[in-house]
Length: 406
Figure 1 (tube, one colour):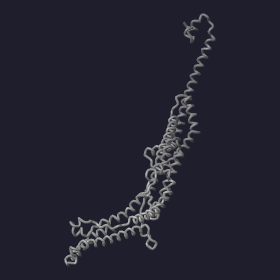
Figure 2 (figure 1 turned 90 degrees about the vertical axis):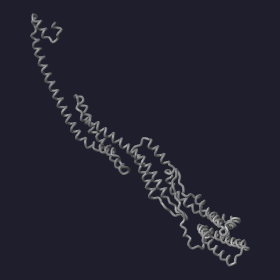
Figure 3 (figure 1 turned 60 degrees about the vertical axis):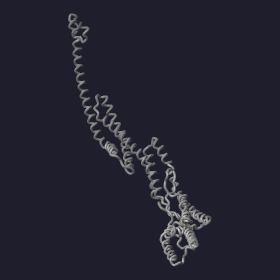
Figure 4 (figure 1 turned 135 degrees about the vertical axis):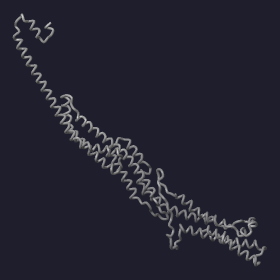
């Protein structure tokens, strides 16, 4: 407003005035003897007009925030956009209340300064002589009047900013996220030995919290002369919740891999022992009893762990993506259950073969023992006829004790 008036005064206005002055001077209506009085009169008139222009502009600017009761279009002013953002461990407004007060109240000073920069007419007509006098017009604007208007606008700004400040209470339920207490909780939680189900509960908690922040928070709200934008704060809080959720999921993925790896190792140990060939009867019986216990007890415990592994996988698939290594380990754990029946069948064949081998060995030993008994019976029959003293040398030669024969 004032800038436009200044441009007009310095360009088109000065040009028109110079034409008027030269015409008046040419027609002897303005003489050199009356120049000072003429220029002073022009300055007084322009100063008065500038003062009126400044006061009207200031009043219009004040009415922008404090409209009189008789103004019909009270809502023509759209107001200002202020953003609620997350900075460190607290929420803040951008721009802040003090920023608004500084900038908006400074406009009054800009108005006063602008009207004090309009040059006097003679500085354009006679630059050399004009330089000796005052170069610019000096309209007098009452300071107390400016301060009163500033105070009225400041009161409105402060009052209108209160609903925006009160709206921050809607985010106080996420205070533990804002203050990063949640980060400390998760760090302590993960440093302890936690069960998978306990971590699962925390993931669901933070995931629901992130969804609540995104879907149940108002991103833009009109509050008096301010339009409050909360989208940046909502994104930041949601990102913090998702980040904590991701930390727990990383630990859960590692826990799942460790559990599945242990499960595969137990299956491998059972399979390796089941397919081993016993070296003797004692090992045969130990292996047989071990597999019986596995079939009656251990295999059902492993099945329960397989079911838990499936539930863990179902949960992780919904919340995170898996690496190829994780997918291979999950597949291996699930495949072990279907591989065990053939392994047990092969074990039965090994046991039966070992049993037949042991039976054949026992049968052979029994036959040899019977042969030895028959030999001992023949010797006993011969010993009954050993009664002739003259044949004692021959008897000693047949003795099984070599010392007696010498």
